Image (cartoon, rainbow, N blue to C red):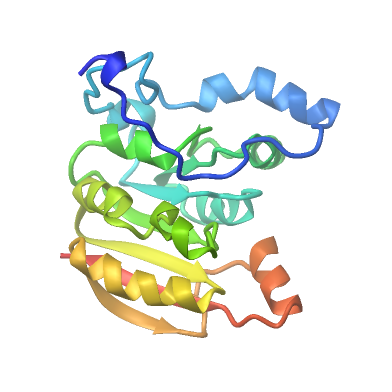
Length: 230
């Protein structure tokens, strides 16, 4: 496949927010290239060959994936509590990437890789059956009906995710949008996952994020769903 055949994708919203602080610009300039997995972009890998996760995370027992990590608080929490696991975080919003890089500097964690772009491009090149756990936490709800096809819980994303996940791997979804719960329950099982649990109680190793706190302040009830790859 050549660069000219790259499919058009428009699944995320804006990629930039308010101006970055000087320290955040420094994190992006000095740290991002070192933490970015190679072979994800179409310029680097137009044939879409699988990337080498063993080289990315030497001597790690498993690799996890967080789609849309926001400010990075959950990703950092999971990485700190699972040092024997490598975690790849995907986030197209550059302000969120800068926030995560700052947290990584503060904590000194070395088991995190950062893809500053669309998770779909990464899933194209993840080796089959390579991901043991995936997180989709408070994703963009795309509330308008005509935009529902942009939600992550569609075949365009879920089928590549299922291919990349190993049998028995866990897929966690958190959202405060009832219609997103509806679509998740409809679409995720069709892509090759079994529902394990759903409810209002978070996972035992959960850390509350800014998005959950905002939902609670605004009176929206969080939902937590757990699926297992068949």
